[in-house]
Image (tube, rainbow, N blue to C red; front, side):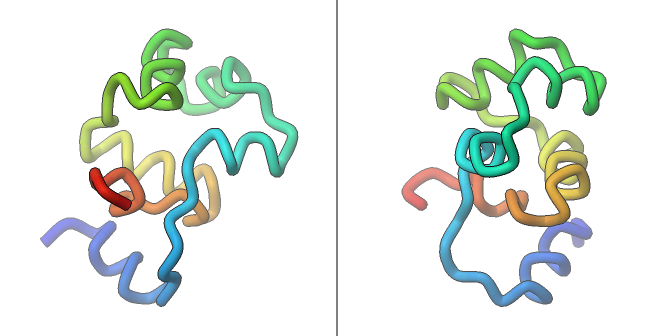
Length: 79
């Protein structure tokens, strides 16, 4: 039972937030976010463009770094 399922239930938020939306709202450059999470800039760029979806352990890390504003389930297709 992944911890992000529990975190999502606790927030009760219905509208997903995209990573780019979060970064724009908080005036964070995507390359600074990559550095903060210790990811390659190429990985973060692909996540933002929708070319790739982060692996589960990275989704959890993104949720923590964004104070659960970008939740793991926000990456599900169709949301």
